[in-house]
Image 1: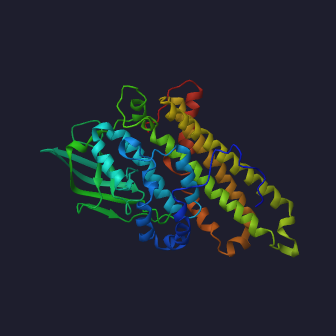
Image 2: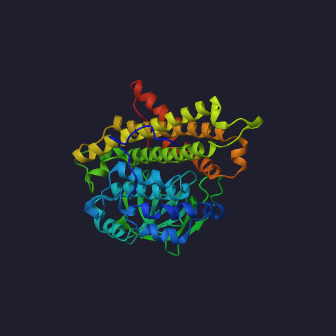
Image 3: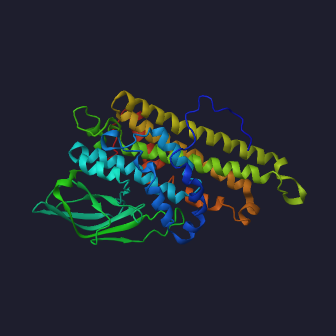
Length: 397
């Protein structure tokens, strides 16, 4: 597809850290989709890559990658293999969340994990139920945690657990290599087949009580307090806002690659009765609309991310309005890309699908993006509407 604009002043850029692995990521994507598992060799090489340290601050040996930089890496991975992008996205944002929760009191643990480029996941979706019983300096975890994206590839899982007799939840991290941890391969969805979004069972796993922290709802409000201790300035930003913005960037990566490849493939295609598809006005209309939507999605997500980076650089804590700016921008970017993907599908038509192109897998994988609860359009727009009316927000996360 012909470029119609320069890159001067452009916020987004090409990836650097993951660039050496992009070809391998793409090459194994079809097999990963078929087997529902990412290639073990690829996982090993990703764990040796500095992308694992991008969301860690210098205080714990991290690279302190900008929000924009992390988005660039994920945006490049997503069209090549949606499952790989999904798992890395989960690692980068959940590590941010865990560093904010554990705080300066757990610098030693965080530093060791970062230095070893260890992988984190966060199974805490619907149907999760974990109980922790404390005795003699240890907490014994028992129960199931659901939606553990990347769990089969990860080293650590964040655990939100209840304690009998206490109304508030607590948090810890569990070593997934322990024999008291069992991963049940329950993810049978049509999208992100190799994302390992499985159930993780804790069968009386013991963790040190010193590695336990509170898990308050609306934790973002605690982080904004200048007197609340954090490891680094980046951790005052709420992980949910970052999660949704990154989701918008990944959606844009998938839609943009699909658009470019479709436009290139269709130039010499012949439609019914011998008409060249490239000459049909409806093709022009649908591709043009898709191009505008993808451009707007990139601009929307990256504008909010650049504002976030500016706050982090200046040491300015975010506000509740900033949180909804982040989630609203990411949500809207995904929504625009969702429409673009439907237009691209319309352009491809029956012949395009018959040829079995990579678009089919991308389209299936994409369906998970607007459904993710953190960036779900119903959740975000309802709360944004409350804010517009002067009502308080209700989002616990």
